[in-house]
Length: 127
Image (cartoon, rainbow, N blue to C red; front, side, top):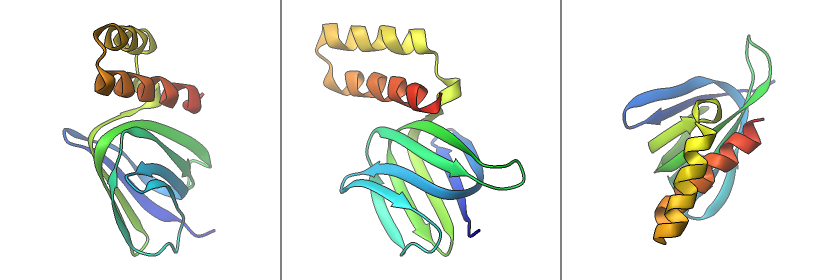
């Protein structure tokens, strides 16, 4: 099976690296799915969940991350997701994210509300 090498990097750390058969992310042009052999692409990431269908020695699985801004670049079988902030679903504190969502709604802070919502959606998708 053809694979693509994926690097998910946040401003402060490498979040995940490995082989995948499919990556789905939200860009300013809409959702995009990248599979091996995709045409080269460079896009701006929007806040949203990123889903990675993993392959490789450890078997197949799904990794979900909450990504907040950045860039996506694919060429020659290598996909780079360079995010301002990225958290794997299993790293997210659900209670904290729920409190942040309620506080953002109370403050009418649309950007904070969107970030908290994406974190909660990433957790739900990662289960």
